[in-house]
Picture 1 (cartoon, rainbow, N blue to C red):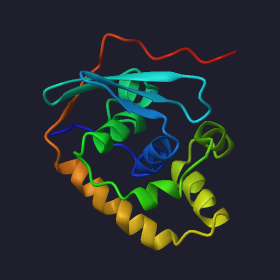
Picture 2 (picture 1 turned 135 degrees about the vertical axis):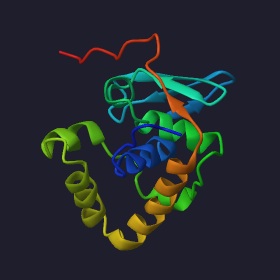
Picture 3 (picture 1 turned 180 degrees about the vertical axis):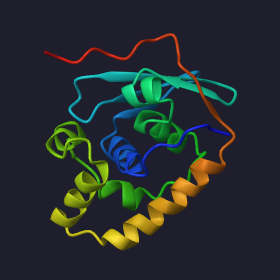
Picture 4 (picture 1 turned 30 degrees about the vertical axis):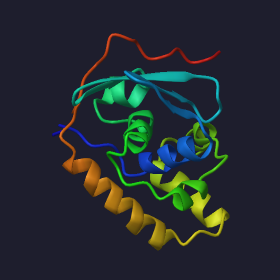
Length: 151
């Protein structure tokens, strides 16, 4: 089991990565492009051990959205494509800056602006979050360092 859990809002970011075709599952690793497509994160998995060079996974020690996106693609988390599609074409990078890393406020702003049923989406996402908490996976710091910020 994981020691630390991500903010539930990281699932919305993973939905976006799936909807935008920014998450790619390969044989022994995955690649996920950032929402602004300026970075490509590498997710390495061996057995139940996962690592990624995204900041959340590397520095915070929890499954960041790139890891969650790969877990969706591996079928380890339940994915409703219709829900993921609601989060298509969102630049989470700029949104999270705008909302000063208040992920909940950023996610709610997106859902309200797009006229989504916030309660229904949250309930569905909570089911995914509960499944994430049940997964027997370990998040480790990998060899690859987080990508530098663009200047």
